[in-house]
Image (tube, rainbow, N blue to C red; front, side, top):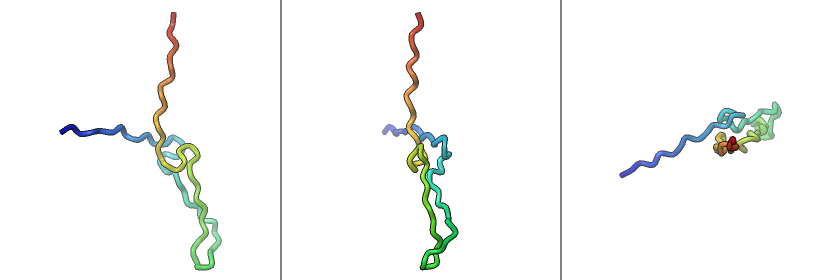
Length: 62
């Protein structure tokens, strides 16, 4: 039975696959936990991977 091999996902060049970050603000919430902000990579929208682009068309030379 044939095995299907999928192309490996391309890691985002801007975030190197670390698409989301939690940043501690330094303040504490009433229950004692730290308040955090979550930031996502703009290029991959937090996925960590990007799709491959089609190769640019090469004009025919005369």
